[in-house]
Structure formats: structure tokens, C-alpha cells
Image (cartoon, rainbow, N blue to C red):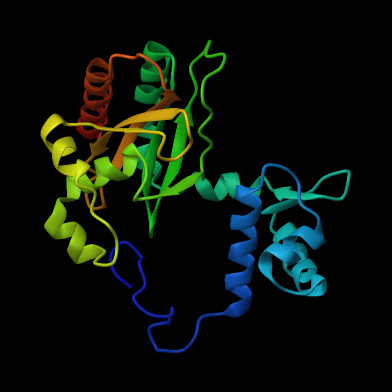
Length: 244
């Protein structure tokens, strides 16, 4: 597995033995629940996981015991509060440093501002801030993800890495041509790539000792001055870098 977590073959442990199927299924259940728009029944989870209901039930019970899954009054299951405790430990310095800057940018631009980080083949939202009076703004929930071949955050991260390093880290993944322009301008732009009618502007953040992240805003496509917005996003990204 390379530095991006992209596996060239089936996952193996260091000793060459297959990974734990039960653990893999438990993690997959958390991913399924995190992506769901509402509570899911045991039958829903079993179908999504491709296993018998009894297996899904045992996995859910274990996750419940650890507070990672919560059962609602109607019998459906959702992500539990224990996941929030775990998430606070992810890129803790980046989250704590970026939050005030994201809050200021969201208020100034009246758009949702967020940080995206690398998770294998995806950009994953680490932390997001909505504007204080942003009726009609796009919601970007922490944990939401999209592939690197769509969206401004992925382009910005690739711009920071450069083509040679990207191909070394992820030889099977596409390097966007737009990354060259983003590297020159200091920010990346996308429109209609992740969600139709939605645009994003992102700038890379160089994180000491880690892969680059991206600071971005997301908004309903309109006649915004993209150059001005890009400069605001880039300045905020540089401010976060300086604090790191």
C-alpha cells in the first residue's frame, strides 16, 4: 500500500496474511451509516453489507457497546456520539488551527468553508463551518467524501504534490490537468463536478510531516467573482499554514 493508502493488490497485513473480515465489516458498517441520509434498519445494513441479518446484528451490537452506533426510538441505527470523540483526534492540530480561519472565511464569503484531507482515493471533509446567516448555503458535513477525479479540493491537493510525486504515490489514479493551472494561480476551481449546480474553490495547505490538505468553500453556482473568491481562499490557506 502506498502513501495515499491506495492498494495495488488485495489488502494484506505485514505478515502477508489476509486482514480481519469481521473488523473490515465493522468499519464498512460505519462507512455505510456515515453516508446514509437517515437511520437504517438491520435489514438495510445487511443488504448494503451483503451479509445475513444475523451477522449484521452482531456487528451492530458490538459497535453499539462502544458508542459508535446509536439506536433511535423507531429501531433504526445511526452513527453514535463515540465517533465524534474519535474524530477529534484526527489531524487535531490542523482542525484546531483551521477552525477560527474557516469561521472568518465562512462569515466573510457567506459560504460553507471546510478542510479536506486525503483518505486513499478520496478527499474527505475533516471540519466544516457554515456562515452565521447563510440561508440556502450548501452544507458540507465532516466525513463526506468524493474521489480525487472530481472537485476543487482534489485538484488543489494534486497541485501541491505535483505530477511526479502524485504518480509516485498513486500511479493508478488520474492527475488532473487543471492542477497545473491551480499551482500557478494558488487556487483550484470546479463546477458541477461533485453535485450538479454546485461550485467549489480550494487552495492547498502544506501540513508539516503529512500529505497536503485543502481549504475550500462550496456554493451554488452563480455569478460570483471567482478570482476574488480564489484569492480569499488562498490567503486563508496561507494563514493556516503559518499557524501550523
